[in-house]
Image 1 (spheres, one colour):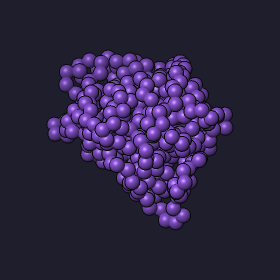
Image 2 (image 1 turned 45 degrees about the vertical axis):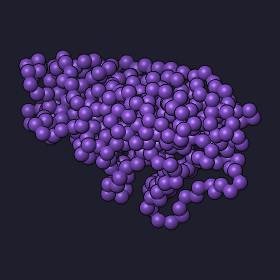
Image 3 (image 1 turned 180 degrees about the vertical axis):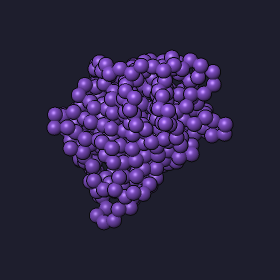
Image 4 (image 1 turned 90 degrees about the vertical axis):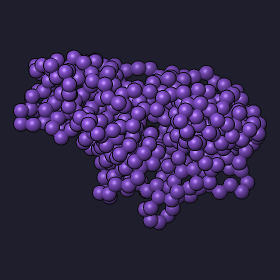
Length: 424
């Protein structure tokens, strides 16, 4: 059974090839990724892919990966195979049970079986795997190399084929950015409604960009911050064509994954639009469901012909980031707000609804731009650390498996009438 994973972060020049078109096209946030797809970040581009269990892969500039396998086994296990073709990829594996998560680069591969965070750098002549958390075992033509936390494994693609272990990690410019994104997922996913679902992808964004509340007669609902009267959930996005399942709605909002593939959008009189998860998030919808639409509202319909994307842009516009400040408009619903970088989005939402527009401080430093001038090739250790290298015997001892529990947040009261909500 084919699976879909989420393109959860896009910045700069990022392109995707769907596996059947043989042509790259511009990638959109929240685009479903399926088996056979290739993704590349060009120039200053960066991207993140989020899996069902909350695992992520982040691409640095001038990097590309492909997905040879994204399937669901008959046993129910999710099998993911990702090949790092070139450049740098950051991998944050959640360590869920019954997951097959295999990474490939060159002639090497590693199967992650427990929680780990690492960086893979691939160049023309070799690769380097730095382990920030956990421990891994990399299999290749020469055997198996064990790499533990705060160590780096170097893999030679040349005829020498000598693999070495460095008991240190050489810092890269985007390591801090990767850590910031990892911390964001940990912080907000732990305060999300994810225990209500068998899936974890998108839950951190729901916790940061909006609020769960109990609505009388409807049960548990979710609504984004920064919305008021006149907003609807289909103001910004696109109908995008996928060779596997036709046209599907791709939301432009940073939280716009889960509410458009599970549950239903419901219009609550006096409150506005809100998302209703339902009793269980069973199945994955390619097109969102709408209930109780107000009079005159036209439910979005997918195109019936062609394969070109149809862009929808009816909203008030994206937030504008300038230096360490961001200008946010009412009814923007978080569009353009950097995730995790405005400290209290609930209070900002109150101010936006009162004044129509606010300027907020951005509290997380942006990662520096990547420079190619004088930089070394990805995957190669340079400088005095080369003196620390030593050939390491390969073994075949498997790593242990573990899992981490999900958590359930406290419930909240229904939002106040008039399209807003009570702050947390």
